[in-house]
Length: 415
Ligand code: PLP
Image (tube, rainbow, N blue to C red; front, side, top):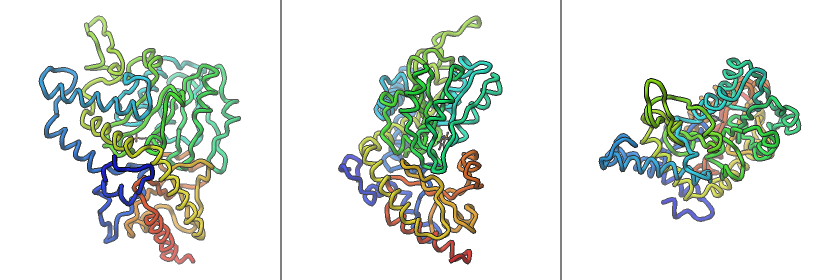
């Protein structure tokens, strides 16, 4: 179905026709793809966009006056405006193409952190962050003699807001917090966290890698200073991501990488930097991935992020109810507000063995620590088997997952 035909209510069974890979058979069984939190699949429309770019439009951008360069430049900048619409950013100058969420966070670490964070300062993160939103801040703290403060999490996977308020203080230079936890599925009420930080004039970076594909994100309504996400988790290609940054911060920050395109003039004595967003896009950017991401974002916008959220919410509720019937299975992450992630441990079966057995039935889940080792440590487990949903998953696929989990118990001699 073309995205524009989508009504207010998404029908996953019909949307599936847009995704050729979903027709695959794995081990003689229909593929049940439940690893969307790692990478989502790509609709034919985005694949076609890549082919069109490579066959009719490819050239380097920004630096020539010939037809192809002007075409590629126009399409690259149009993709930026699609991202601006997705996030409701005030200006396309605030949309910076990066190689992914990790790269976007590192940009802020270098551009903001190395300029504004000094000895004795503090950076606040939460206990449920992906390593991408921990390690760069640790590196900065080590370099600057600053200190990392951590918002604690309760047994359900919800952050402790009053503990957070106590962590904030005159030394706080940045709050870096996830919008949706990739390991637990918790939706963090980030607007409240942002408002609290802003009372002290502290900027907030939101890691939106797991939120942008599933929720309607409005950076102006949230009030965040930075918002990061990855293209490959939202039906686009790998190698592309986005940093939204409020212009007033981006203008004050130092560039992350130096090179072509991020300059206005260079002499051996002095370089003058380019304006936004180019100041942060040194060198030839990932042109084709950016254009393909723009197409993916247009597709998601046509489906409607609110429709996607509703459809995935129903699927997660159904899956949560169904796996509750399985003996010995424990869901890790039972927050009141969750999005698209069902992390499980099964008594008597290691998550990796569980993942391998599910794969025999064509069911793709991820087993591991999900780049969130502190989360695993918090719950005293080495790993989980994580099913993560997209709008093209169906209740029938949840039934296959449940049947496969029950089969795994039999294989392990568990009743
Ligand atoms: N943050 C979160 C919450 C994630 O789930 C991920 C990837 O799984 C990342 C950051 C890192 O994204 P990438 O590897 O695309 O840079």
